[in-house]
Length: 398
Image 1 (cartoon, rainbow, N blue to C red):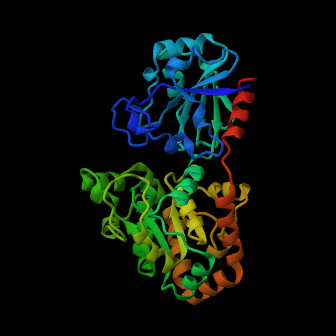
Image 2 (image 1 turned 135 degrees about the horizontal axis):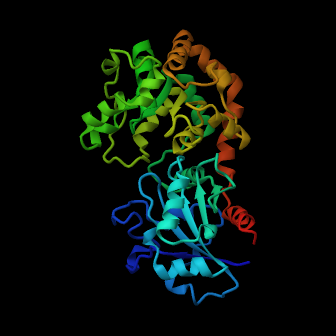
Image 3 (image 1 turned 90 degrees about the vertical axis):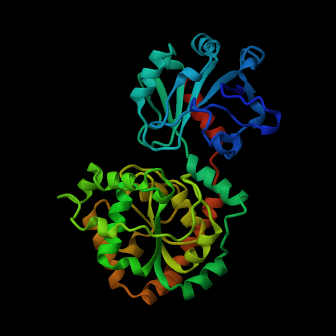
């Protein structure tokens, strides 16, 4: 069955290309280019995307999916869909609403249920593509949920296309590893409780001086000091310290800059970081979400840089990578998980106790083939849109 895509966010400016407008009802969302949203998926058929006026002109027997971009919890609003399109979704057996909600791993099915009721949309005709692994292939209140690999696909396209990303060859990485002066690099920009916990552990233990670290995004945020204080006082951070954050925590949360950030866009690439990557042996990653499985550009940047890495947080993130064929490096770090301050301080102590020459030789002797495997797997893998559409058709019994 041929699949066509109908957009309810079409842009009528001819020189803007294929971009969508007013996705979040504020006309300011910067993630509105079709390539950012969908075009990076292998075999995504851009030529099959039509404005809503085509819904009656395309063959009735073909499957028509109304594309609707969402981002819970930041915004979730199905009222952007024209009533005529909603009628097609409700009454035409081959028209479905395809919500794409992949920028975060956290998903709120109850909000989708409420939005369907509020906008009189038949939930049985709604499909949600998400980055949430736990909800994959589930049906909740009639709505179908399917997991897709959005961030891996998008990051691969970024590295293939963007000129401000400096790629490192295998020989360059080996040469850099022989001279690197720091044990690790750890980038902690968009502040979250887990990153404050890790910054405290690095500073309080004395490990901070042995790595290249950043901890700085609030400097380009509105009311940064208040935002930082809210992080320090958050219940999530409190739980990571068991009895609450130590009295001296603020002394250890000083901003650390590696490169200049000129905007607060959560995805950042900068060639200026390359010298820090080359001067570091390991990569310690604080992913966007600490307790859920959510692999973003932060992890795939380390893979693309040909570095052994450890992701702080839910160890199932490493498990998920292994399921996809990647090697992970718990043995090199002598740690299986870091979920709280006690485990973070323990990892810091292990890195402090280990001589940098010992780390260097183990990487060069034992780990380079696995690092190269990860690099090749990342750039040769596919996040195939055709496969996603097969899952969609199976979910709706077509």
